[in-house]
Length: 171
Image (cartoon, rainbow, N blue to C red; front, top):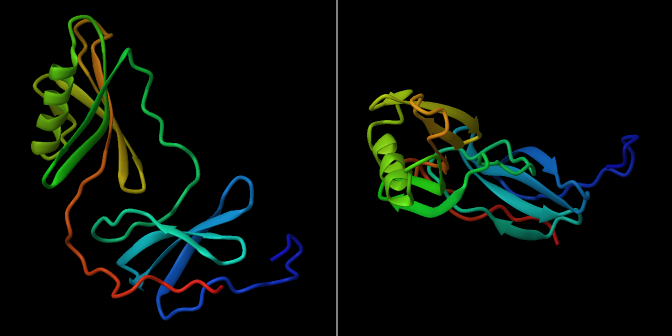
């Protein structure tokens, strides 16, 4: 609809539960959650005309509150790649600090995930900021104040039912 509430247009036509729309910064696309109920859904992106662009990768449960802002990993000296394992995933692992290499950073990220994502692990503090299922994690040790590992973390696995078919946008 227009800003004044006129020119309303229905963009989706399906039996699914659609909610939480978020317009792209340029106003050309819309992201929203769609699923069979309030506890299960995936994020879809459509054009302003209602044409399906894509469904974002499936993760179990409810993927909601789409946002067009980037989830930033704190600046780090070295990008170490991704660590993805069954049941957990650390993405965009980075290392910063004297004597801290990629092997140590990746190992620490895996250990943190395997331990159930605690606030502290082996004397290392974990600062976690949640962005709707993706977490920005910074693991740091106080010894030199510069030794840190930063990464994005998103649990994987299939716990909930998946919609039988994707929502049908119009067009």
